[in-house]
Image 1 (cartoon, one colour):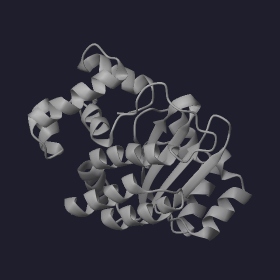
Image 2 (cartoon, rainbow, N blue to C red):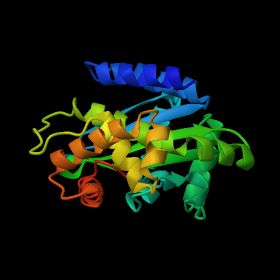
Image 3 (cartoon, rainbow, N blue to C red):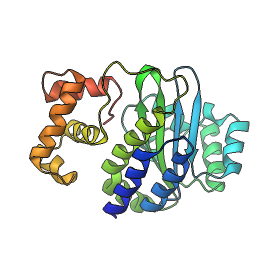
Image 4 (cartoon, rainbow, N blue to C red):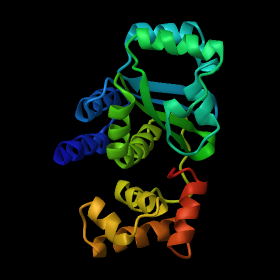
Length: 237
């Protein structure tokens, strides 16, 4: 399972065009065994891009009804920096309940987990996994895959940004996928030994990644590097 995930992420890293991300997100859906995975970005200029496994019928319906205005996932994630289980969002009002019922009828699923991502220059993105199952099954899934979904969301966003229309070069050097992984897990409160174990690398190699990230971020120490990475939208925990 881990080897398959790494192979998919390698495909993501090597992608040369935006269209390739559609095949990759479908592969990620199959790897995690969920009904759907979706990625959606909005740039500071208002340009949008999305890829995912929702049906064309649902996507068209969503756009026609302008559900972006009432979708609790969109509304809730604009107000949050941390990943969120859909059950914790506000579905109380009539419009939200009607939207939820219709989404389920289109096969979206009654469960969801969304990672909000703040990127450079006002870019905002969401990475979502959704499924139809019981609360207990979903809780077990998110508990077991939360860390991986967060890391993958940021790697997916970083690759998508390479293709953003009119993208301006960053003043600071970009962090590598492994550097983002390391800094994210440190920010989540993992010890260095735990981070190294999670990434299947030695503590010496981990130290190299952290020091490289610290240098790129112009940080004085690891804590400063975490703070800078979060403030620039490079990681979300």
